[in-house]
Length: 317
Image 1: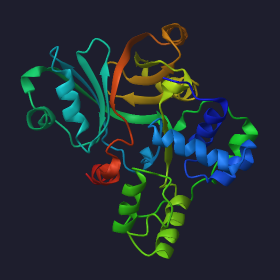
Image 2 (image 1 turned 135 degrees about the vertical axis):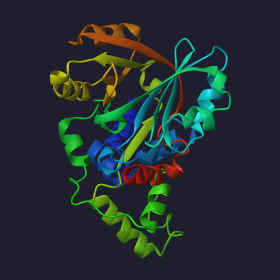
Image 3 (image 1 turned 90 degrees about the horizontal axis):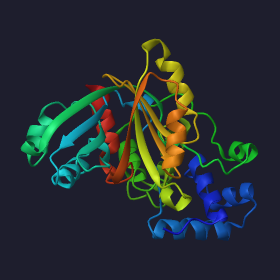
Image 4 (image 1 turned 45 degrees about the horizontal axis):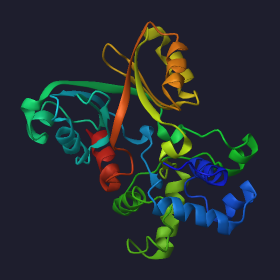
């Protein structure tokens, strides 16, 4: 994988702050030409290294979400992982190193039927552990490359959201389209309603914090070759403090408090295994299990067109 140039990395970093920022605004903040910014975004999107999508805010309906660990007979893992990835109510699917375990995040309402009804070969599943997600300290939208200055980040950061809004059918359709490509403008979304109406709705959704973007970049192009999950057991009285500290760590791209013996999970990106070792040995927790992701089967933005319907249904249950 060819590493991104410095300019490409800075443009991606700007999209991490605001995925809907226009080329002119990014160019002004980063002291580049709008043409350069436009070309970088188009090139990275065309070769699949960058996808900017709209993702739900945990505060807006991720109640009941589950963190799944599925152990599978050797040789059957790809089939099970693909079956999970096809489900609209499953956000993430990773095959862990060793090839006999799958990690996934799914919306609420899943129970034993996930194995009996959804997976093609239940005899291949040797163990299913479903941990309820109690709190999201951070998710992938929080992660930053760290390449922008504080002044640049501040200039690109959207205003804080105001009061939440109740979604109607048009709002949901717009969010479903933005879940596939968050950079679509009112003109490109005009098939859903008159352009003036779409523009007003986008402004309303943005002001309420419903349009929450994620710049999904192939991190190997940033030199990050190791994706790992660290499953920790933390005393309940320290769980909130440890979770908040990890959420701010520059290597962490997701931190979840869960039920179960391991009650805190951190997803980390590292340059190599030596970096992962440094991260793990710096943890002040009683115990930790480390698993390395061998293959990311599904991430937010893949098959994202039903994601907001799923969050609505989950929060309504």
